Image (cartoon, rainbow, N blue to C red):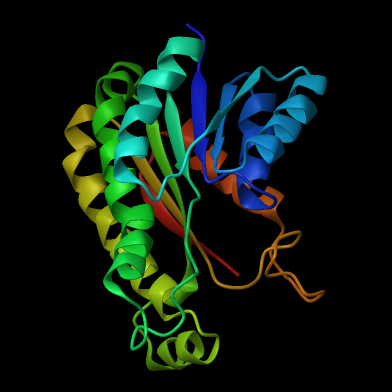
Length: 228
């Protein structure tokens, strides 16, 4: 049966490297992000490399939209084998000035929508003994120096969301073990080349991270990897 990976929060950097890595290994690729134009361009590039890909424009900060994503993907590409969650929101810099809607949006994108997407894909993931693969960032680590950095970078909301997502990964790893679903997380401590964070001194190659996700999937071993 054809394998399909759903890349949620596609853009330059890690998610695009994951799409290319898994596509190169024979997976179909479902590209998910808000911008239809950018997704279509990315889809065309993958298809030019003989990778079957499809674009699914979706606002993943909306839990209802996330909940409906899996049916759209399976209707076009068939059952889901793996989900890569790369979506994040850095719009809440200072939690002392953020309103309730903005705070909910940041949390929903990192946690609520991820959970709802997994609920909808659970039967497929069980049948395929598939994988949940999550990109996370070092700002979520519990360290006073990192907390100071998050405040200095005006990224407090992202730091909170990353911390919650990291806890979720641990819970999912335990919960889904009996279903033989692999749960993997790569925590990036540093700046990823080719992204909006790259001002010329980025130190993390996204292809290295994609290789880590492939290793987690292919070895069927749930774990957390830190890369810097």
